[in-house]
Length: 281
Image 1 (cartoon, helix red, strand yellow):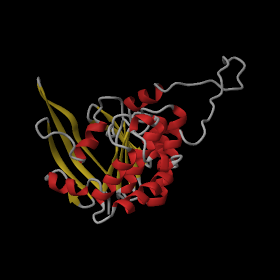
Image 2: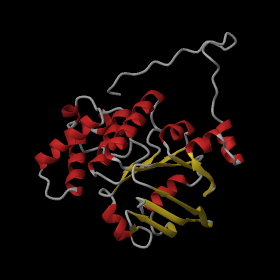
Image 3: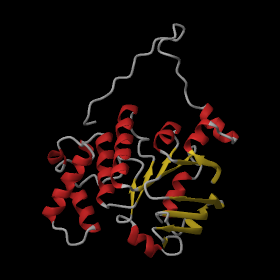
Image 4: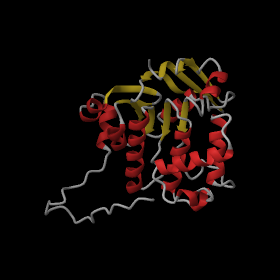
């Protein structure tokens, strides 16, 4: 059975000029162990789709219609259902690691609280050991030291690993990753994407990936939905959509990618080869 099923999802945002249709009748599903990516430019509606499914949009600013189920439970008709699923059956990796954590609480305190909220009856000592195991699982250097650190004391790559560890603590069936590498430099992005693939292979979790990066989509996805102005304009297996695009909008996205000449082409200006950063970024 699909972990996530969405049919004819609509989201109307209330603005000073009236209702704006941000998501217009999208339908898709995600099976266990599968990664489905929604890709599009900023403002296309991809993050709004994810936030609507998690019911993280304010009721007075967003009207949600259609049908969606996570693990067989309706999440559109009632906030009560999705509230019981968040942090347990479904976990979120938010977009900006620099602002996603409480700046006045240590990493250890925030992760310990998250574990004790999602796993009732776990003691502080047990939660602390679980936090250390999770930080090691995401390859964060010196995990014992990081427990006492505040968010501003860690780099963007380290914070993203902490957020991934917090998502893992829920042992969720579905992980929603909203632009998980957009705030990171290219070398750190590669490490985070490898980590997500490793975790998915180990846990078998399904993943809804939101991104504007076609390179990320190609690496991570089983299936891709290309979104423009709130609608899916092209959907299919990642190889078909990226390598053989049918819709003009998808072709424009691919044409917008920067292209580099060959390293061995004598007519190409010399460009320094990128240096791969060591573990711990």
